[in-house]
Image (cartoon, rainbow, N blue to C red; front, side, top):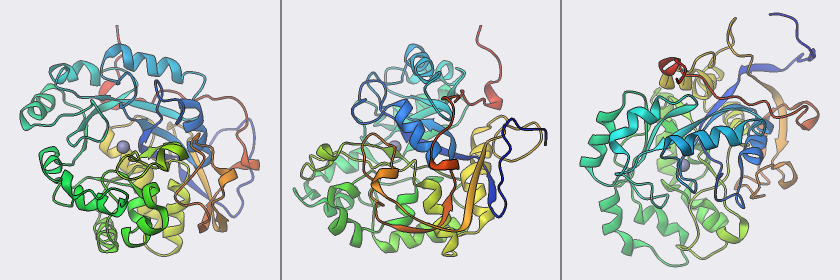
Length: 362
Ligand SMILES: [Zn+2]
Protein backbone atom coordinates (compact mmCIF):
# COMPACT_ATOMS: atom_id res chain seq x y z
CA UNK A 1 0.00 0.00 0.00
CA UNK A 2 1.41 3.35 -0.99
CA UNK A 3 0.55 6.74 0.39
CA UNK A 4 -2.87 8.18 -0.36
CA UNK A 5 -3.67 11.81 -1.00
CA UNK A 6 -6.50 11.70 1.53
CA UNK A 7 -6.18 9.25 4.45
CA UNK A 8 -9.47 7.66 5.52
CA UNK A 9 -10.15 6.23 8.97
CA UNK A 10 -11.98 2.95 8.38
CA UNK A 11 -11.61 1.58 11.90
CA UNK A 12 -14.28 -1.05 12.54
CA UNK A 13 -15.47 -1.03 8.93
CA UNK A 14 -15.11 -3.74 6.28
CA UNK A 15 -13.32 -2.98 3.03
CA UNK A 16 -14.62 -4.89 0.00
CA UNK A 17 -13.26 -5.00 -3.55
CA UNK A 18 -15.19 -2.35 -5.50
CA UNK A 19 -18.65 -3.61 -6.40
CA UNK A 20 -19.22 -4.26 -10.12
CA UNK A 21 -22.80 -4.07 -11.43
CA UNK A 22 -23.00 -6.13 -14.62
CA UNK A 23 -26.28 -4.69 -15.91
CA UNK A 24 -27.68 -1.17 -15.84
CA UNK A 25 -29.82 0.87 -18.26
CA UNK A 26 -28.87 4.56 -17.99
CA UNK A 27 -31.10 5.73 -20.90
CA UNK A 28 -28.63 8.14 -22.58
CA UNK A 29 -28.88 9.03 -25.40
CA UNK A 30 -32.53 9.50 -26.18
CA UNK A 31 -34.43 8.87 -22.94
CA UNK A 32 -32.77 11.32 -20.57
CA UNK A 33 -36.07 12.19 -18.89
CA UNK A 34 -35.70 8.81 -17.14
CA UNK A 35 -31.94 8.84 -16.37
CA UNK A 36 -28.59 9.85 -17.83
CA UNK A 37 -24.99 8.73 -17.49
CA UNK A 38 -24.28 11.35 -14.80
CA UNK A 39 -27.33 10.71 -12.58
CA UNK A 40 -27.16 6.95 -12.98
CA UNK A 41 -23.47 6.74 -12.14
CA UNK A 42 -23.96 9.10 -9.17
CA UNK A 43 -26.60 6.70 -7.83
CA UNK A 44 -24.16 3.85 -8.44
CA UNK A 45 -21.33 5.39 -6.43
CA UNK A 46 -23.67 6.51 -3.63
CA UNK A 47 -24.69 2.84 -3.41
CA UNK A 48 -21.12 1.54 -3.31
CA UNK A 49 -20.83 0.48 -6.97
CA UNK A 50 -17.46 1.38 -8.52
CA UNK A 51 -17.80 -0.10 -12.03
CA UNK A 52 -20.69 -1.10 -14.26
CA UNK A 53 -21.78 -2.37 -17.68
CA UNK A 54 -24.44 -0.28 -19.41
CA UNK A 55 -27.02 -1.76 -21.80
CA UNK A 56 -27.58 -0.90 -25.49
CA UNK A 57 -31.34 -0.19 -25.64
CA UNK A 58 -30.96 3.55 -25.88
CA UNK A 59 -32.12 5.77 -28.74
CA UNK A 60 -30.30 5.38 -31.06
CA UNK A 61 -29.46 1.79 -30.16
CA UNK A 62 -25.84 1.02 -29.32
CA UNK A 63 -25.40 -1.26 -32.32
CA UNK A 64 -22.70 0.50 -34.37
CA UNK A 65 -19.11 1.69 -33.85
CA UNK A 66 -20.35 5.29 -33.97
CA UNK A 67 -23.01 4.76 -31.30
CA UNK A 68 -20.52 3.09 -28.95
CA UNK A 69 -17.96 5.87 -29.47
CA UNK A 70 -20.70 8.41 -28.78
CA UNK A 71 -21.50 6.79 -25.40
CA UNK A 72 -17.82 6.74 -24.42
CA UNK A 73 -17.53 10.43 -25.33
CA UNK A 74 -20.66 11.28 -23.32
CA UNK A 75 -19.26 9.36 -20.31
CA UNK A 76 -15.95 11.23 -20.23
CA UNK A 77 -15.91 13.76 -17.38
CA UNK A 78 -19.55 12.99 -16.46
CA UNK A 79 -19.59 9.45 -15.09
CA UNK A 80 -18.63 8.96 -11.44
CA UNK A 81 -17.60 5.31 -11.78
CA UNK A 82 -15.75 3.15 -14.28
CA UNK A 83 -17.91 1.84 -17.08
CA UNK A 84 -18.20 -0.29 -20.20
CA UNK A 85 -20.98 -0.39 -22.76
CA UNK A 86 -22.66 -3.39 -24.36
CA UNK A 87 -23.14 -3.47 -28.12
CA UNK A 88 -26.59 -4.79 -28.99
CA UNK A 89 -27.05 -7.54 -31.56
CA UNK A 90 -29.72 -7.23 -34.24
CA UNK A 91 -30.48 -9.14 -37.43
CA UNK A 92 -28.80 -6.25 -39.28
CA UNK A 93 -25.44 -6.35 -37.48
CA UNK A 94 -25.31 -10.06 -36.57
CA UNK A 95 -22.35 -10.73 -38.86
CA UNK A 96 -20.26 -7.77 -37.62
CA UNK A 97 -20.36 -8.46 -33.89
CA UNK A 98 -16.65 -9.36 -33.90
CA UNK A 99 -15.81 -5.81 -34.91
CA UNK A 100 -18.10 -4.26 -32.28
CA UNK A 101 -16.94 -6.42 -29.39
CA UNK A 102 -13.29 -5.53 -30.07
CA UNK A 103 -13.85 -1.83 -29.42
CA UNK A 104 -12.21 -0.44 -26.26
CA UNK A 105 -14.83 0.22 -23.60
CA UNK A 106 -17.16 -2.48 -24.97
CA UNK A 107 -18.21 -5.09 -22.39
CA UNK A 108 -19.32 -7.52 -25.09
CA UNK A 109 -22.37 -8.31 -27.19
CA UNK A 110 -25.86 -8.21 -25.71
CA UNK A 111 -28.71 -10.29 -27.10
CA UNK A 112 -32.39 -9.86 -26.30
CA UNK A 113 -34.07 -13.14 -27.27
CA UNK A 114 -37.42 -12.02 -25.91
CA UNK A 115 -38.71 -8.55 -26.69
CA UNK A 116 -38.17 -6.33 -23.72
CA UNK A 117 -36.68 -3.33 -25.38
CA UNK A 118 -38.31 -2.47 -28.70
CA UNK A 119 -36.12 -2.96 -31.76
CA UNK A 120 -33.27 -4.77 -30.08
CA UNK A 121 -34.31 -8.33 -30.71
CA UNK A 122 -32.76 -11.58 -31.92
CA UNK A 123 -36.00 -13.56 -32.12
CA UNK A 124 -34.96 -16.72 -33.96
CA UNK A 125 -32.32 -19.40 -33.64
CA UNK A 126 -30.81 -18.70 -37.06
CA UNK A 127 -30.00 -15.06 -36.23
CA UNK A 128 -28.72 -16.11 -32.80
CA UNK A 129 -26.36 -18.60 -34.43
CA UNK A 130 -25.00 -15.84 -36.70
CA UNK A 131 -24.38 -13.60 -33.66
CA UNK A 132 -22.65 -16.36 -31.71
CA UNK A 133 -20.51 -17.37 -34.71
CA UNK A 134 -19.36 -13.80 -35.29
CA UNK A 135 -17.48 -13.01 -32.09
CA UNK A 136 -15.42 -14.70 -29.43
CA UNK A 137 -16.03 -12.61 -26.30
CA UNK A 138 -18.76 -12.99 -23.69
CA UNK A 139 -22.32 -12.66 -25.00
CA UNK A 140 -24.91 -11.52 -22.46
CA UNK A 141 -28.34 -12.95 -23.21
CA UNK A 142 -31.73 -11.79 -21.99
CA UNK A 143 -33.18 -15.30 -22.21
CA UNK A 144 -36.93 -15.23 -22.65
CA UNK A 145 -38.51 -17.13 -25.53
CA UNK A 146 -40.16 -14.70 -27.95
CA UNK A 147 -42.47 -17.11 -29.86
CA UNK A 148 -43.82 -18.55 -26.59
CA UNK A 149 -44.51 -15.08 -25.19
CA UNK A 150 -46.24 -14.05 -28.46
CA UNK A 151 -48.51 -17.09 -28.06
CA UNK A 152 -49.27 -16.18 -24.45
CA UNK A 153 -50.21 -12.49 -24.89
CA UNK A 154 -53.81 -13.37 -23.94
CA UNK A 155 -52.72 -14.28 -20.42
CA UNK A 156 -52.17 -10.60 -19.62
CA UNK A 157 -55.03 -9.19 -17.56
CA UNK A 158 -55.42 -5.42 -18.05
CA UNK A 159 -55.01 -3.60 -14.76
CA UNK A 160 -53.51 -6.65 -13.04
CA UNK A 161 -49.70 -6.64 -12.96
CA UNK A 162 -49.71 -9.96 -11.08
CA UNK A 163 -50.58 -11.54 -14.47
CA UNK A 164 -47.17 -10.43 -15.78
CA UNK A 165 -45.36 -13.62 -14.62
CA UNK A 166 -48.30 -15.67 -15.94
CA UNK A 167 -47.78 -14.22 -19.43
CA UNK A 168 -43.96 -14.40 -19.30
CA UNK A 169 -44.07 -17.77 -17.53
CA UNK A 170 -41.14 -19.76 -16.24
CA UNK A 171 -41.15 -21.90 -19.39
CA UNK A 172 -40.42 -18.69 -21.33
CA UNK A 173 -37.24 -18.16 -19.32
CA UNK A 174 -35.60 -20.97 -21.17
CA UNK A 175 -31.99 -20.57 -20.20
CA UNK A 176 -30.57 -20.48 -16.72
CA UNK A 177 -28.88 -17.12 -16.40
CA UNK A 178 -25.63 -16.75 -14.54
CA UNK A 179 -26.58 -13.28 -13.35
CA UNK A 180 -29.05 -12.69 -10.53
CA UNK A 181 -30.67 -9.41 -9.52
CA UNK A 182 -31.10 -8.17 -5.94
CA UNK A 183 -34.83 -7.65 -6.59
CA UNK A 184 -35.39 -11.31 -7.58
CA UNK A 185 -33.56 -12.26 -4.36
CA UNK A 186 -35.65 -9.85 -2.26
CA UNK A 187 -39.18 -9.54 -3.69
CA UNK A 188 -41.85 -12.24 -4.06
CA UNK A 189 -44.92 -11.84 -6.27
CA UNK A 190 -47.43 -12.71 -3.52
CA UNK A 191 -46.42 -9.54 -1.65
CA UNK A 192 -44.91 -7.41 -4.41
CA UNK A 193 -47.85 -7.14 -6.84
CA UNK A 194 -50.52 -6.20 -4.23
CA UNK A 195 -48.14 -3.75 -2.55
CA UNK A 196 -46.17 -2.28 -5.47
CA UNK A 197 -48.40 -3.01 -8.49
CA UNK A 198 -46.77 -1.98 -11.76
CA UNK A 199 -43.72 -0.74 -9.83
CA UNK A 200 -42.81 -4.42 -9.38
CA UNK A 201 -43.15 -5.12 -13.11
CA UNK A 202 -39.93 -6.11 -14.86
CA UNK A 203 -38.49 -8.74 -17.22
CA UNK A 204 -38.02 -11.56 -16.44
CA UNK A 205 -40.88 -11.08 -13.96
CA UNK A 206 -40.78 -11.16 -10.18
CA UNK A 207 -42.25 -14.61 -9.50
CA UNK A 208 -43.54 -16.45 -6.43
CA UNK A 209 -41.76 -16.89 -3.09
CA UNK A 210 -41.08 -20.49 -4.13
CA UNK A 211 -39.13 -19.19 -7.16
CA UNK A 212 -37.25 -16.73 -4.95
CA UNK A 213 -36.33 -19.55 -2.58
CA UNK A 214 -35.15 -21.55 -5.59
CA UNK A 215 -32.82 -18.73 -6.65
CA UNK A 216 -31.37 -18.65 -3.13
CA UNK A 217 -30.88 -22.42 -3.25
CA UNK A 218 -28.93 -22.25 -6.52
CA UNK A 219 -27.01 -19.21 -5.27
CA UNK A 220 -25.91 -21.34 -2.32
CA UNK A 221 -24.85 -24.05 -4.79
CA UNK A 222 -22.56 -21.57 -6.56
CA UNK A 223 -24.51 -21.30 -9.82
CA UNK A 224 -24.77 -17.52 -10.41
CA UNK A 225 -21.42 -15.83 -11.01
CA UNK A 226 -22.50 -12.22 -10.84
CA UNK A 227 -25.16 -9.92 -9.50
CA UNK A 228 -26.51 -7.20 -11.77
CA UNK A 229 -29.08 -4.66 -10.67
CA UNK A 230 -30.80 -4.40 -14.09
CA UNK A 231 -31.25 -0.75 -13.05
CA UNK A 232 -33.98 0.42 -15.45
CA UNK A 233 -35.49 3.69 -14.38
CA UNK A 234 -38.89 4.95 -15.47
CA UNK A 235 -40.67 8.04 -14.18
CA UNK A 236 -43.46 7.78 -11.62
CA UNK A 237 -45.95 8.91 -14.29
CA UNK A 238 -44.85 6.19 -16.71
CA UNK A 239 -45.02 3.49 -14.05
CA UNK A 240 -48.45 4.67 -12.87
CA UNK A 241 -50.07 3.72 -16.20
CA UNK A 242 -52.37 0.70 -15.89
CA UNK A 243 -50.87 -2.71 -16.70
CA UNK A 244 -49.87 -3.68 -19.41
CA UNK A 245 -49.32 -0.10 -20.69
CA UNK A 246 -46.83 0.48 -17.87
CA UNK A 247 -43.15 0.01 -18.83
CA UNK A 248 -40.96 -2.86 -17.58
CA UNK A 249 -38.11 -2.26 -15.16
CA UNK A 250 -37.17 -0.72 -11.84
CA UNK A 251 -34.17 1.24 -10.52
CA UNK A 252 -31.64 -0.70 -8.44
CA UNK A 253 -28.01 0.32 -8.92
CA UNK A 254 -27.96 2.27 -5.65
CA UNK A 255 -29.62 -0.46 -3.56
CA UNK A 256 -27.63 -3.45 -4.89
CA UNK A 257 -24.94 -3.52 -2.21
CA UNK A 258 -27.18 -2.41 0.71
CA UNK A 259 -29.64 -5.25 -0.09
CA UNK A 260 -26.87 -7.85 -0.33
CA UNK A 261 -25.36 -6.65 2.96
CA UNK A 262 -28.81 -7.06 4.52
CA UNK A 263 -29.18 -10.61 3.16
CA UNK A 264 -25.70 -11.35 4.50
CA UNK A 265 -26.72 -10.09 7.96
CA UNK A 266 -29.78 -12.36 7.70
CA UNK A 267 -27.38 -15.26 7.04
CA UNK A 268 -28.59 -15.94 3.49
CA UNK A 269 -25.10 -15.62 2.04
CA UNK A 270 -21.56 -15.36 3.36
CA UNK A 271 -19.17 -12.43 3.00
CA UNK A 272 -17.01 -14.56 0.68
CA UNK A 273 -20.02 -15.30 -1.59
CA UNK A 274 -21.03 -11.62 -1.56
CA UNK A 275 -17.53 -10.58 -2.66
CA UNK A 276 -17.48 -13.24 -5.37
CA UNK A 277 -20.88 -12.15 -6.72
CA UNK A 278 -20.03 -8.44 -6.70
CA UNK A 279 -16.43 -8.37 -7.93
CA UNK A 280 -14.45 -11.58 -8.47
CA UNK A 281 -17.29 -13.20 -10.44
CA UNK A 282 -17.41 -10.34 -12.95
CA UNK A 283 -13.63 -10.48 -13.34
CA UNK A 284 -13.80 -14.22 -14.01
CA UNK A 285 -16.71 -14.04 -16.44
CA UNK A 286 -15.67 -10.97 -18.42
CA UNK A 287 -11.85 -11.01 -18.20
CA UNK A 288 -11.63 -7.60 -16.56
CA UNK A 289 -8.14 -6.15 -16.31
CA UNK A 290 -7.09 -4.70 -12.94
CA UNK A 291 -10.44 -5.22 -11.19
CA UNK A 292 -12.18 -7.87 -9.12
CA UNK A 293 -9.89 -8.08 -6.10
CA UNK A 294 -7.82 -5.97 -3.74
CA UNK A 295 -4.23 -6.57 -4.80
CA UNK A 296 -1.01 -4.78 -5.69
CA UNK A 297 -1.19 -3.47 -9.24
CA UNK A 298 -5.00 -3.56 -9.34
CA UNK A 299 -7.23 -0.50 -9.51
CA UNK A 300 -7.89 0.86 -5.99
CA UNK A 301 -11.66 0.38 -6.31
CA UNK A 302 -13.05 -0.12 -2.81
CA UNK A 303 -16.53 -0.33 -1.30
CA UNK A 304 -16.57 0.22 2.45
CA UNK A 305 -19.31 -1.27 4.60
CA UNK A 306 -20.40 -1.00 8.23
CA UNK A 307 -21.63 -4.53 8.92
CA UNK A 308 -22.94 -3.55 12.35
CA UNK A 309 -24.88 -0.57 11.07
CA UNK A 310 -28.51 -0.19 10.10
CA UNK A 311 -30.12 1.98 7.52
CA UNK A 312 -33.57 2.81 6.12
CA UNK A 313 -33.93 3.48 2.39
CA UNK A 314 -35.42 6.96 2.10
CA UNK A 315 -36.52 8.87 -0.98
CA UNK A 316 -34.15 11.78 -0.33
CA UNK A 317 -31.16 9.40 -0.46
CA UNK A 318 -32.02 8.20 -3.98
CA UNK A 319 -29.98 9.82 -6.74
CA UNK A 320 -31.63 8.23 -9.77
CA UNK A 321 -33.56 10.73 -11.88
CA UNK A 322 -36.72 8.62 -11.54
CA UNK A 323 -36.86 9.46 -7.81
CA UNK A 324 -38.34 6.19 -6.49
CA UNK A 325 -37.27 2.72 -5.40
CA UNK A 326 -39.34 -0.43 -4.79
CA UNK A 327 -37.37 -0.73 -1.54
CA UNK A 328 -38.27 2.68 -0.05
CA UNK A 329 -39.00 2.43 3.65
CA UNK A 330 -37.18 -0.89 4.03
CA UNK A 331 -34.82 -0.98 7.01
CA UNK A 332 -31.66 -2.90 6.23
CA UNK A 333 -29.07 -4.43 8.49
CA UNK A 334 -25.54 -3.47 7.54
CA UNK A 335 -24.83 -0.32 5.68
CA UNK A 336 -22.70 0.85 2.82
CA UNK A 337 -20.57 3.84 3.82
CA UNK A 338 -20.11 7.00 1.81
CA UNK A 339 -18.02 9.65 3.45
CA UNK A 340 -20.22 12.54 4.51
CA UNK A 341 -22.99 11.08 2.29
CA UNK A 342 -21.91 13.06 -0.74
CA UNK A 343 -19.51 12.66 -3.61
CA UNK A 344 -16.36 14.75 -3.32
CA UNK A 345 -14.49 16.00 -6.37
CA UNK A 346 -15.44 15.59 -9.99
CA UNK A 347 -16.58 12.58 -12.08
CA UNK A 348 -13.44 10.60 -12.93
CA UNK A 349 -14.96 7.36 -14.20
CA UNK A 350 -12.91 5.72 -16.94
CA UNK A 351 -13.59 2.95 -19.45
CA UNK A 352 -13.11 -0.54 -18.00
CA UNK A 353 -10.24 -2.51 -19.60
CA UNK A 354 -10.66 -6.14 -20.68
CA UNK A 355 -7.82 -8.62 -20.95
CA UNK A 356 -9.13 -10.04 -24.21
CA UNK A 357 -9.21 -6.63 -25.92
CA UNK A 358 -6.10 -4.93 -24.63
CA UNK A 359 -4.78 -3.72 -27.97
CA UNK A 360 -5.37 -0.13 -28.93
CA UNK A 361 -7.55 0.68 -31.89
CA UNK A 362 -5.51 1.98 -34.86
ZN1 LIG B 1 -32.00 -5.18 -18.32
